[in-house]
Image (tube, rainbow, N blue to C red; front, side, top):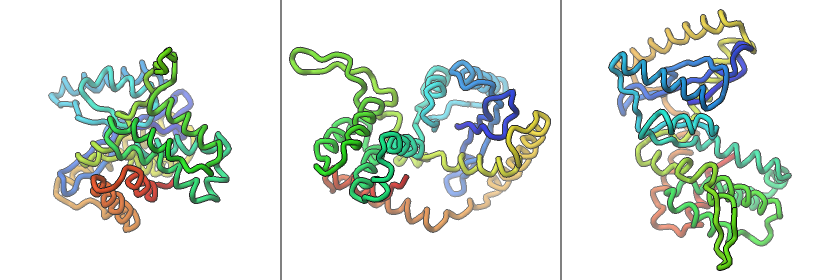
Length: 295
């Protein structure tokens, strides 16, 4: 689930699309199944969308209770999923986690050093590599990663770790007790949201790359920014027609498009490291994953 903004008429905030898997294990493909022109990105607006979908499902005897949904790290949509889609586990897109970390690399003035120094780059990439651990193991692993930070890292790396610790791992310190312990708030994005181990175990996508690819294709099809309402409705109708043709092709048993060789090899390397996780010390495992991460 994700939104695109460039093409929508100015009376709307975004075109929000919900993509799903169509087909069996041998030929399934991810494709857009729901289009919603939304006037706001508020939690209330997302809740109204999900409520309408659930009502539609009830009226047409369609079970709309997936086990997992994949979103970006927008808090309004995450809250709406939690409230309206009971029992559904929300997972954050791993690619959006990369983006979030790299934006902070830039914000802390670390971008030039990240680009020129492989030691800094590799250590920073250990941070999103934490996602390949079970969520309950991530806080202790983060602490170990931080305590083993090479002494020659610039101070901006410490700032990056402080930020990640507050918002993604331990939460913000709100009180220090006399015995030396601290009381923390819940992190805004807890490890249960962005750990990808369940995605891997249940062959659920780690990223919304297929959604982002559809967004790029959609912008090319529409051809310009902020088209009129009539134009976007006609384009959506045309896209729906094409999707129905693809669904029939999948139902006939046609194979999914072949994965690019570079992407296939990249996934294979990650899987090799992940499968060997029990045989590697923690930091060696994270380093292996970090080698296969790029911003």
